[in-house]
Amino acid sequence: MADCIFCKIVKGEIPCHKVYEDDSVLAFLDIAPCSKGHTVVIPKQHGETVFEFSRNANGHLMGAAIDVMKILKEKVKCQGFNVGWNHGKAGGQAVSHVHVHVIPRYEGDQGGSMHSIVTSSKEGDVDEVAALL
Ligand code: 5GP
Ligand code: ZN
Image (cartoon, rainbow, N blue to C red):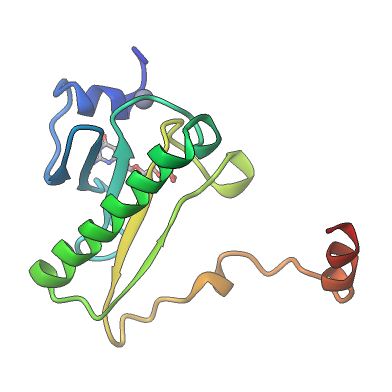
């Protein structure tokens, strides 16, 4: 997509520090890292969310993200990770091109877990949602 910043990185129009690349996936260092080694893993094909990609394509993206974890573990010697993606405006997605954040974690880095992203759940939510399923 012409005005997409990540498509421009894929095309080489904007430089990046490459971490991993294959035929359909590119991974590069985040320009505003949450921790040392923070990397984004993207499909080369433009799509706003994972819902626009096939199960196979999404599976390949996840496999590449796991390869990136292995590379980072080796290179930056982190002890853990948070891995995931901000999906949609409500989920904090700023760049409208699918990207998996691979965020290295270090002992004593003062960071939180998935449970620190949002804490809006109310009593009774589990039963209410379970009834919907
Ligand atoms: P989002 O908030 O959409 O999940 O994450 C977008 C990420 O892309 C942010 O962490 C941001 O720092 C990163 N980012 C935005 N523009 C650029 C860029 O031009 N180059 C690189 N390497 N990262 C970028
Ligand atoms: Zn794009």
